[in-house]
Each structure stands twice: as structure tokens, then as C-alpha cells.
Length: 212
Image (cartoon, rainbow, N blue to C red):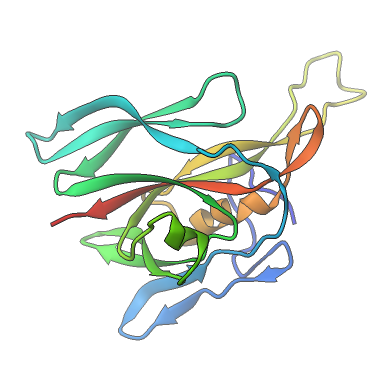
């Protein structure tokens, strides 16, 4: 199976990397779907902190919410910033770096006219449980692995550069459930480094936790 491509962010929804994933409808909620995180027993890249909250935060919407900055460790010399993500005023921002396997069951739920992806279950004793992920947390951003095409110029047409698998992030807001799950599952694809392919041991998540 191929890793996620930045332009389309799509993989098989029911099976990824040879491991089946249940996406089942819930009674009484036809638009609700659930998916559990995949198991992984690989060793490789481990940063200790894949994402953290930055210093820039401001109120928006006449005090009805706030925007805050996040920084992602994608393997470069400096972290990659993400700005402009809005949160409700009665919510808490949670950033976690979780070793794989996560031990989370996600569910797609309707919130007014919008869909959101919510933590529906945290398996007892799992890595997510140890990271203090809570049922009801809303997934806003996940780290991912993207397949990035090589740079092509006029001198490279006879020997085009290879694409590479790189660490990245994926904003879950208003994205199809299947594609967000693909982004999480893409961590099973090794990333390319100067020392060769390496497994990604951790997943970074930005969660919104209701407090009211």
C-alpha cells in the first residue's frame, strides 16, 4: 500500500497495510462511524514531543473563542508552525505525543451542521490512556506521513528523482472521516532519512477538550 499523497490524502478505507480496520455504523446515528487505531510493533524515530502549543494565542469572535499556535517536530532544523486554528472559549487545548499503538477508537459525530471526529473510547492500559487522552476529546490535527514527489528540472528527465516519505501534519477539521483515519494510519509507512528508511514510533495529536 502506498503512503498518503499531499494532494489527495487518500488510501483504502477498509484495509491499510494489510491490517483490517472496522468502520461500522452505530444504531440511531447513521452518520456515525468508528475506527480503532492500528497496532504497530516497529522501532525507529522517537522525538519525545511531536507537537506542542506555541506562545501565540488571541481571542476571536468577540470573546466567543480563541486561536492558538502549534509547533510540529517534522525532523527539520526548526519546528513547523500551524496558526489560525480556532477553539471554543469553553474548551481546553490538549497536545499529546503517543507511542504506537495508540489504543483509541475514533467516531465521527454531527455537531450542528458540521461533522467532527471524537474520541469514543480509550482502551484501558493503552498508550493513549497513559497520555491522558479522554473520551469526548475532539481531534483537530494529527501528524502523518506524506509521499512527496522529487523536484524535477529540465536536466532530470532521463533520470527523474524519486519521491520520498516525509513527516507532516494533517488538519482534521471538516475532512472526510476516512481520510483522517488514513492520516493516522500513515504512520505505518517508514519515513526517508539520510540514514535510510526509519519507522515512526509516535503520533502527535492536537485535541479540543470541552470543559463546560
